[in-house]
Length: 309
Image (cartoon, rainbow, N blue to C red):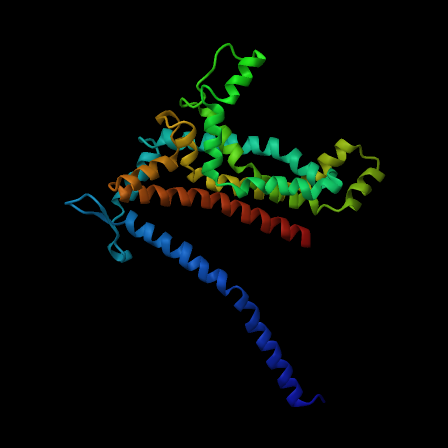
């Protein structure tokens, strides 16, 4: 029979290990509580709070038993057929078009770096993350200079004969806002897709070729399905911040015709009045993007179960 002390010692070590590994998640849990759960509860307290009758400022109500959903219900009615409906539909349209362009442009880039770049893979990855070294607003300001009436874009197009006269690209054009969204977020799409493509084993592609599949058929039947999770991860990663973006329309347009839902929230917060309505819109927006994240998590869990089956 094994020595009882040794058995107890082994059980103690196992118990220590069981306690040790959850401690690794402790910093993440603390970070999540302090920087997400607490601020989100504060937004809820403002959205369900009251308005100061003298100064018109939002007054948070911290006790959920005393929450007033009047403003929240009003915002939902505005989104479902009210004054916020065009703004919400415009935001969804911009985000969907910009995400589709990111997929069309980003997939070939990620595929080339992952499968064809060879010794240039690392330099290309460095170039890909290089824009992260520059502040997002500074990059948008660079586009302002490029797209202004006397900017380089107009000068080049006029010189090439593509335009008869310079155009004001910053005068409330939807295409300019979408261009800014694509430029600002496409690296966030390419990186997770590159990781997914890089993980595809060469043996799978060789097996497809050995079975007589053409390169195009190998791509559509092997590479593309196996990179689907990377496409989904990259798309969710860029769509979530796009929905809350407000400085891209501000810098590249500034026109009410191209306002997004983030601009509406920014206006309520910056003006100091209407904070309750701004917080309610924020909660609704978070619930909407939460649906996208839930679909992504559900899809990943389903793919994982199928892979293990």
